[in-house]
Image (cartoon, rainbow, N blue to C red; front, top):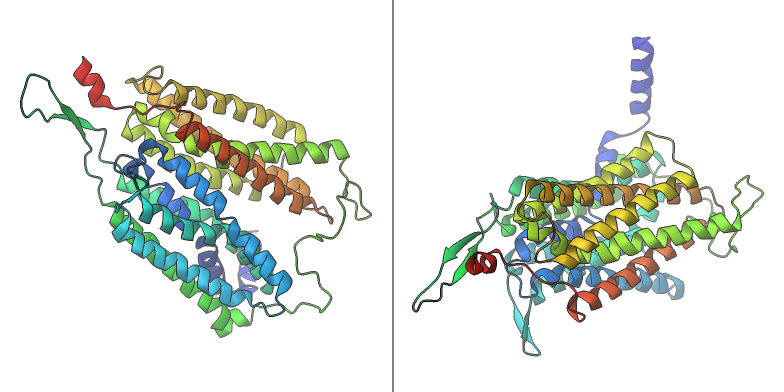
Length: 437
C-alpha cells in the first residue's frame, strides 16, 4: 500500500517541474505583497505619521483609487491592437520593487499641503504598489493560462502567501511593547507627560528593504517563466478560437444553462449582495477604523490584531483546498456572525478613547480574537461565493468582481468621510489619562 502511494506521488511529481512551481509561486507572491507589507507596518506608522489614527482610512481610499490600473488596462487592450501582457507585467513588478526600496528611505518624510502635514512619500509610493495589486487580478492570473493548469494552483498559493509572509515577518519584528509615559516637564507646576514607544526588533526601513527584495525576486521569477527553457516547455498552445477571458462577458446573466449549472435568480442576486456586503466591511469599512478599535487597548493588541488577522484570511481561504465548500444557508449563517462581530468592533471604535474593558487582559483578548474571526470568516465567505459561481459559463464571476469593487468602494468612501470629517472617532493618548490621574 505504501509503495502504491509512493508511486502515485512520484508520478504526480514527474508530471510537473518543481522549478516552474517555484517560479509561479514567486510570481503570485508579487501581486499584493507590497500593499500587505505596508499595511502590517501600521502599528509602527500611525504613531509617527501626521495623519495619526486616520492613516488607515487614507490607505484604504488609495487602494480603491488604484483600481484605475485595471480600468486603464482594459481600455488599452480594447482599443489597441498591439497589447503584450508580458511587458506590462515586467513594468508593474519593476515599479513595485523600486517603489518599495524607495519607501524604505522616505516612509517617514512629510510635506505641507494646504497648511497641513501629510505623509506624501508613504501614500504616493503605496499607491504605486496598490496599482500593481489591483491590476494583477486582470493581468497576472490570466497570464498563467499560458502554462499548464497545475501551475495555476502554485500561483494562487503564492498570492495567498503575499499576505501571510509580511504578517509573519512583522510578527517577528514586534512593536517593542506598549508606550511608556515620560516626564517632559521643563518649568512651572504643570506636569507634561509624553509617550515613549519602545523600539521593535528591527526598523520599518529594514522591513521595507526585505519586502523590496522579495518583489525583486518576484520580478526575476517572472523573467524566468518567460525565458528559462524548462518553463517555456510547460506552456500550452491555445486554439485560435479559444476564449481569452475566464468567462464570456458578452453572455447575459445566466441562472440556468445547458451545461448543468443551475441557480435561481433570487439566490444569484442574494449571493452578489452578500459579496458586496462582505467587501463593504472587509475591504472598505473595517480596515479604516481598525486603529480606533484596537489602539486604546495598547500597541501590542493592535500589532497582534493587524498581523494575525492578515494571516487568518489566507489561511481560511486555503480551507477550500481540503474541505467541501458549504451551501448558501451555511454562508448566510457565517454572514450573520460577521455582521455581529463587525458591529462589536465598530462599537469599540466609536467608544474610543475609553472603550469597555480597557487596561484589562480580557479586553485585549476579545478585540484581537474578534478581528481574527472577522478576517477569517470574510475570507471563507468570499471563497465560498466565488466557488458557487465558478461553474457558471455566463457572467457569474464577472458580476462577482463587480460586486466586490462596488462594495469596497462604497465602504471606503463612507468610512473616510466619517473618520476625517464627521469626527465620529477619537484618538487615545495614554499619557493624557495618566496626567489627569
